[in-house]
Amino acid sequence: MKTIRSSIAFSTCAALLAGCAHPARVSDSVKLKDEQGVIVYRMSCGPQVAWVEFYRSGQSSAGFFSGFNRAGALLCQEGVQTQRVKAGRYFIGKIGYTSWIYIAENEAMTFVVTPGKLNYIGHIGLPSSLKQERGRILVLISDPVVRDKSAEAEGWLNAEQGSLRRYEFTKALAQAPAKVGEQRRAVDQGKTP
Image (cartoon, rainbow, N blue to C red; front, side, top):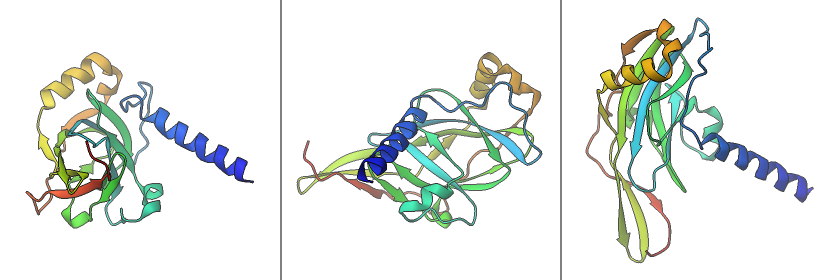
């Protein structure tokens, strides 16, 4: 029984890691359902941050198993990325790499997806820094920053995913959390550099 559980756990981890190898990209042949839109974005992150998870408004992002309820993930990778998402309001509820932190909806960056459209949510920067404290390395994560580089995103769409241009491109920039400027202590790796 242990061998089966280990094999399933290994297979699950391998599948998750394989999914993280390439930036997100909607298939060129996608036909959106009535309640779906596409998010267009770019993520850049500081050290020891690899991804954020986003959740539908009203859902909790807290708890070990909350990832099963996430709406999607934004990967910290080079280049513009696209994902098909159900229409609605979302918030960035978890930030992580080797460890993670939860963010309550009322303190999180939010964005809205309009159905049948290419929703440009921005070029999102997630600054972080490393700090050594009492022999441990801490990762301090600042609030996300959104920049409007919609011309760059549209240029990329025209060059790389021109077939998606059948859908209207709209600026739907993610909104900063109400409480900004606070550093979040995210990762305590328990090792020295």
